Image (cartoon, helix red, strand yellow):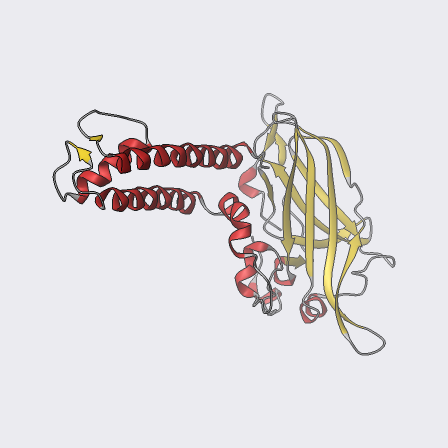
Length: 295
């Protein structure tokens, strides 16, 4: 972004309200549902954490059954007497239905444990497979938004602009965008409210989204942003919230993407750099190296 710091007022940083900034919000008295919301947590946690949880569960189950096998010395044929390692690795082989044959259950107690462990292993494999499939099969959007929004003149009217691009270079059908502003306001009774107001865009729908889409909102007398400045938006802790959705032609599923702009990410009096052009042969060029730049 080619903007001089001297031309930008120093604005307080407004915390976003989306999930990515949830650490900036303190929740009190909220029931987190505990273990009852485990499925959602397993679907949304990072991949490394998910693998760690699955690995930890696998080790915990094997340690539990190894401890139970250890209660019956001599119950496993071929195991060294009192060897917890042999009990543990026998449990691993049983849970994975490997059956190398070096160690086998001898007593009725160990045979019953093997029966229970195989039953538990079937459920564990089904749960892990289902969770992994649910994670990798979810259709996701690869839509990027410009780092900043701008407010500039368009046909003599101040206009809020930002742009989006489909990074997969496939087709998104019947794409729609909704833009809202959320900010504090004081009611006639003197109460502070956090309110959403829609920002009408010049074009809210496109039948085919392949390249780039510049979203624009005219700040006229009917706009909730009419008369606002960078300072007034910062004082009201304003945030421009963008939701884009459409039908991904590859997945044949609805996808969505979201972005938001807080006051210090809105550049006044500048415009987005043009990223379209043509080469010597007449082919269209899209220069994404300037996708986030303003001038």
